[in-house]
Image 1: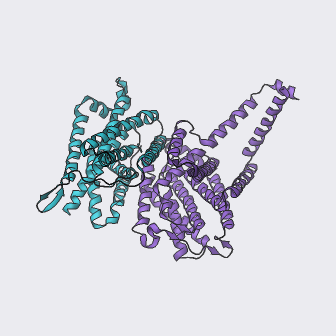
Image 2: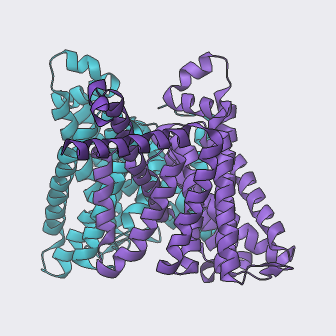
Image 3: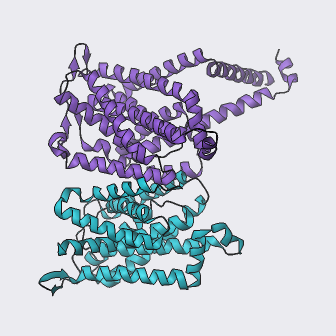
Amino acid sequence: MRNVLNKKRRVIQIFTIWWGQLTKTNVGRRIFELIFLIIVFLFFIPFLGTHRATDFAIFCIMVLSFDLLYGYMGRLSMGHLLYLGVGAYATGLSLRYLTSNPLLAIVFGVLAACVVGMAAGSIAIRATGACFALINLAFNRVGWFLVMSPLKAITGGENGLSVRNLSFSFFNFRNPNFRFWFVLISLIFVFFFLRVITSSSFGVLLRSIKEDEKRVRFLGYNTYYYKWINFIISASVAGFAGALTALNYGYINPNVLDVNANSGVIFACLIGGPGCLYGSIVGGIIYMLITNLLPIYFQRWELLLGVSLLLIVFRFRKGIWGGLESLFNRIAARENSDPPLEKGVSK
Amino acid sequence: MIYAIMYGLTIGAVLYLISIGLSLTFGTMRVINFAHTITYTIGAYILAASVNDFGIPFLWGGILAVLIAASVGYCIERFIIRRLYGESLDYTFIATFAVFLIGVDIVKWVWGVYPKPLSDPIGKSIDFLGFVFPVYRIFVILLAILVFFGLELFIRKSMVGKIIRAALDNKEGVRCLGIRVEKYFSIAFVLGSALAAVGGVLYAPITAVHPYMGLNVLLLCFAVVLTGGMGNLRGTFFASFILGMLISITGRFWPAGSEIVVFIAMAVVLFFRPIDI
């Protein structure tokens, strides 16, 4: 009996050591992340079909960009979908009027989101907390409105906009498999890009702004500037997600920047665990699973979403990934504090 | 043009009634209440149901709606917001947003998603210098001004109002005097919810009643509160009437732009006078 117990403990010990090795050494960690991401999304294909899996990956990019703003800098934005919409419309319009190259169109989309982020960010970043969220919400509303009526002639208003010129030499966005691999590689690229940013000294600065902005300013940093830069990066990544959305559907309608849909992104970020890149991917996948599968069985899913948001706020602030992490840490701490006598018995 | 001004005054009156509660709750509790306009929606729906389905007269239906909405507001305060005092603003924001989602879904569950029509309860209009004004709208404007003076009197003269005003200024100081601040917060919250429901009841015959009506108004109310200054009751009054005029006058010359002009005004105000919370 004791032997079995020890064996079990041994397995756990090996596992925690392995986990520690993987998360401590940089190379092992990166390879692990790469394999983890690819396997997770490949796993979805037989379940949901390629198109759905692509959708999941795009949503994960969106959640990652939101997490950079909320999880790392502590600024909750209620209007982040504006940048997704700007990216999508800029891509669609540039494919229609400017160029026939989808890759160039993606660059245009990201640039447009970046420029809009610069303009809106210079106002929004002055506020903090709820004020920041509301200003973003207002901007999102203005953007939605602009698409719906004053710019109706070029955006198509409520009817939406169909995207032309989807294929260029061997970048054929009509092929679902190509789309899937392109989006997956973009997701991995964005993931590593954000990993580099968040683990650099810039990322440390962002986290310290989240903790206490006054002290950071006291240390001599111009926090306004850093917040602005981070806002622009986040907006550009969201614009990238928007560009991919446009290419994935081949059609854009104003719902991509619907104000109400922001709650989905916030929910995904919270459920996965804010302030952690894995967390946002886990949260994005779980949120998409809920919204894709639940309405089939249960009509009042908005109610359920509200109740689970309340539960998260009152009970599980760290989200799923945060919970898993603290579980691992607890196991590792218990292993380390084991009395040495028992280890001798096992040998 | 006269009609545009009249319409602007009506919108300003309704906006004032709704956003005063938001301003109060923000000022006292430091809680941005996203669930605020759920009482507005519920008030309008109960009015519509009682007038259309049960044949209750408008006045009694309105009073019933305000009472029920106030009790809903008390429940929200008691079970959600009271647990979140002193937490970071983000969490209160998300929690009240969750309440908003739940409320909208319950409204959809009970009454369905289609808009409900309601007719003008007075139906008469008066002739003044050749212009025809509906009596109902004049009544709405007068009521808002009455509420403004009543609230001023309540806040400045009565003991409860004085405590709320002191708590707006310095919560800890009031608590040190041995006053249970939470009780007065709860009174302010219920008052705000009831006034929002009054706004919903009054605005329902002018616009259509639908589940997402709260969200549109909420954005306008946030704009009003941000431009008027959070927790500043007189500022809220003037901001709501100014923004209401702005909406209707823009709507006259450029109908499509009437909604965004409010947000542009808000952005301009915030640009020159950033709020630090």
